[in-house]
Amino acid sequence: MQSAFLGADGLQCGYCTPGQVCSAAGMLDEVERGHPSYVTEDLETTPELTDEEIRERMSGNLCRCGAYVNILAAVRQAAATTGRPA
Amino acid sequence: MRQMEYRRPTDVAEAVAVVSGDPDAAFLGGGSNLVDHLRLGITRPGALVDVTGLPMASMEVYDDRLRVGANVRNSDLAAHPVMRSRRPVVARALLAGASGQIRAPGDHLRQPAAVHPRRLLPGRHDPVQQARPRQWLLGGRAVRPVQRDPGRLPGVRGGATVRPRRGPAAVDAVVVVLGPGGERRVPVVDLHRLPGDRPDQDTVLGHGELITAVELPRHEVARWSTYLDEEDTVATPIGSRGIGEIGIVGTAAAVANATYHATGVRVRELPVTADRFL
Image (cartoon, rainbow over all chains, first blue to last red; front, side):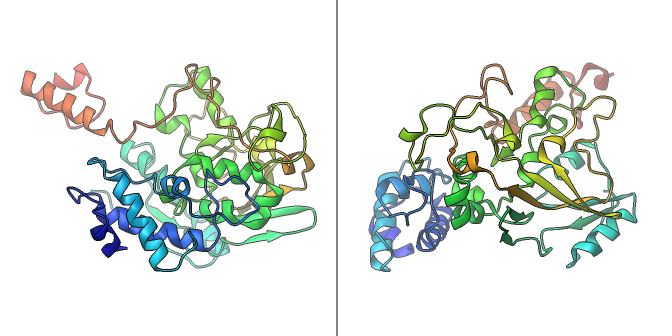
């Protein structure tokens, strides 16, 4: 996850980055265990890791530099690299 | 600084026995309510009994009810297959209540207490505020059953339509309480009390009584209901929500600094009223 943030340029000032990385790791773990989110359409299915799901699940962490687009890319990349559901 | 004893029992009965036997002891959960009360001087316990390590984090499924332990986390409750299939209204409300980063450590029982008016405005009890503790809040927001066409809502099949009743009435939840006299059950609608002549008491629970679980009885309407994220115009007339509590912390300090600058008198307690400068 850390390399994915570096690779995707998922930060500017870096202040929020440790929290973003921890949240992203925890959030992917929840997805792997099938936890639904606010934007999961059907509670009785296993949620897929769409961009909308990533945004919602990362919504508790704010980035004042506004690096969200690249944070999204970093999480997507890390999820793909570790073979998590995408 | 006031000294406090801290205890972390591993047994539920022991925790109840400790607090029951010491009029000066208090249960400590996540602390969002108690710590505020400590800061405001509303409560000054001599001993804190931490209940977060007690074995109350299981969820049990019976034929006629679901029993959710008091230490079950919001994330785990919302993700539980039985909640998702049989109580989507609860799962949806939890998922709407906060970000995942807050749901993961948040427990479903103690968050409701954190919105009690005693914490918001000590000493002020207007009718609007009095209405609040009557709501059962899941993850910080009121739950109400589906009122409109439920067939069009995500994740909801079927067509039950019910009147909007607030809170626990939506799922008829019952709180399981363990006290020095044994176990008793309190319908969650009856748990919170109006301030009246005892504004220091949030609930009907006696000293040493500990909520160990919430039970959700069989409920066919709840099975087909979901949660609507709507403006709540009853709790506050303009539908406002408490989102600025952390951001406003600096304001009091800034005002206090300004009064010091203007008068040369340093006031170190809130509220910063005129009599403190004399």
